[in-house]
Amino acid sequence: MIRFVYTKNDTLFFVLNHPCAKMEFNYKRNLIKSLLKEVRVHFPECACLHVNEVQAFVTNQKSEEEALVVSANSDIFYAEQATGAFETLCDDEKLRALFEAIKETIAKNRTC
Image 1 (cartoon, rainbow, N blue to C red):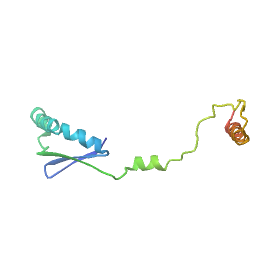
Image 2 (image 1 turned 135 degrees about the vertical axis):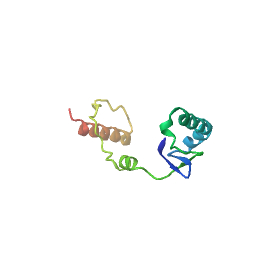
Image 3 (image 1 turned 180 degrees about the vertical axis):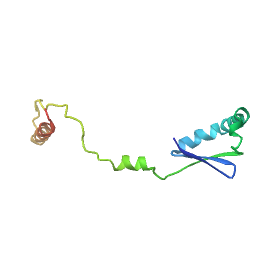
């Protein structure tokens, strides 16, 4: 649920994509801050990481990947599994016509 992270003015910002992620983040904020202090102690090469505060916010902008998923073609891409071999035991003519239309649709979409 983390979209990206960046630093600005000694603050580490987490950009999240869902409000529930922000709620969970708020519970873990102190843990993240203490872990960042430990990283500086145990890994001297990270001394340049100057973070005094940790913040998170939720963005409503769609990423490029999400935009591609939304605009993807939604045509059926799988083979029809049904055979359409069922009896229409209905006395109502309207329902019988609907069942026959379903049979025809199944037969039309069936490739095998």
